[in-house]
Image 1 (cartoon, rainbow, N blue to C red):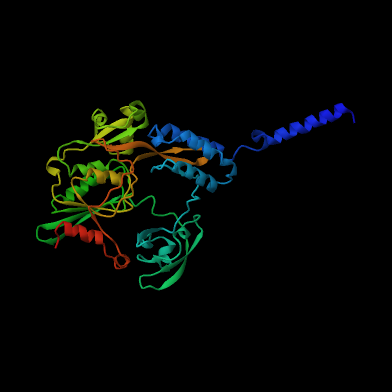
Image 2: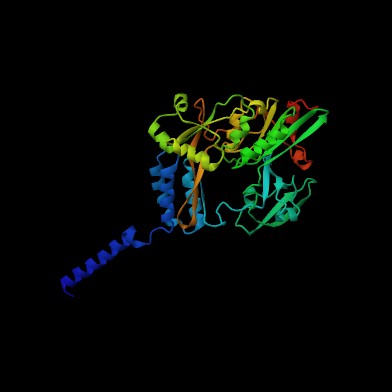
Length: 418
């Protein structure tokens, strides 16, 4: 073999090695690259705080993008994307896969309450296999709570102990339930214990579009009660329609809450002060997603929402608000608006108060992003700020098994019901 042939063969071999060594040419791009890049960019464009709470979002994105090579399925991408979003440490920031199959898993249509560190069945969807299989309110889950979740339609095998302390094994299908919540999200009634004396009870599980009209109906029917219990223990949020109800308990119209978006905060370029809030445009009567977002957009990314003067319709009697670990988002906003007017009974709320919006991603994926922060008129930042009860209440398993409600009992005592 001539020396030139050897040199040519060596060069060909070297070129092949270089090609193999090149990441860009050695393999296909990561499977979920379009979804990842769109997700990162969507958060970069819409996350309400342009400073990302002091974190380096670009560096976070680069770090997680490097892990895409090992992602081969939807569940893996959901885990990676969820971990990346979790770096920002905020609520209302979630990624959703294109189908009902999720790495987070589906449960068995049971709402669990943690009592003394143990998961107790607190509510069961009557259409679920769990109910048909004999699971009852008050049952103690002996299996790890992680065993409850899994792919929709798969079978969960769970060991439980009933209220009589007998144990048995359940084999139940996992189903999607409890979300979306029951509609409408309002229910109310009154109880009288003496002539011309009554207490009103108003349970609200959502503050969605239309909640302002429901609030009007409820307060019209409960206006002459001697006291009112407002139960938002299972309220997962909604929107500022809660402000219509809050107006019934305030006096003259005043600034209630400010929603500030990225455009406004980027121009402001300093921590929000009470003086900043004072200069933001005032809005009254925006009680739907469309009108709320439109009001913020119309005023360069900021709006202060005003309570309404209800005049003779104002409710001046004592009010007790029930809160718990499932009280979140707009329900917490309602709670903060009511802080000076009501007594709070129950347990610490979820601490998930921001304003989110859903966006589409490639391949049928979706992401919810907090696009507006929430501030009080005095400049207090309500971001993920939990409500604390004035009167904490400790539950026992026996309370659940025997269908007692210690929160209601304490609220009635506060209202002076014998």
